[in-house]
Length: 111
Image 1: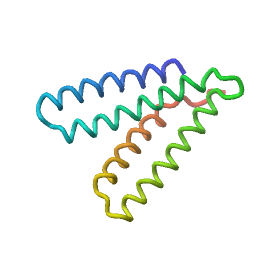
Image 2 (image 1 turned 180 degrees about the horizontal axis):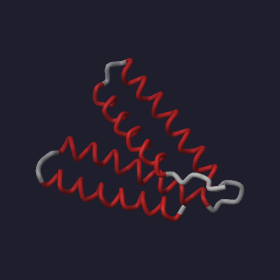
Image 3 (image 1 turned 120 degrees about the vertical axis):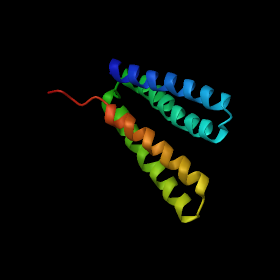
Image 4 (image 1 turned 135 degrees about the horizontal axis):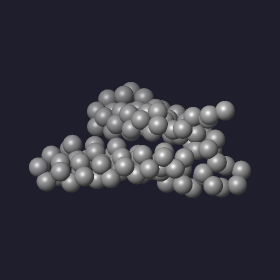
């Protein structure tokens, strides 16, 4: 799990740099979406740190929480699409893309 947390930290640091670069070049909308993406990595790192060493929780609890995020954020995206809310559609897609990357880097059990 150490490598997973390090990966999330690297994504957060890269995201902060992207945000600063985008803001400096006057690309506020792009910076806002970079903030959303970076925030997802930060949320996932916080949840992982909170659950990984908690008695009765651990790796499976982290995996379950990531699954709950996916379900909830997919439902929110569907609702935004139903209501033609273009901004929230893009935010929802951005969140799910970042979450998909997090899940792809989540360590598999090696038995």
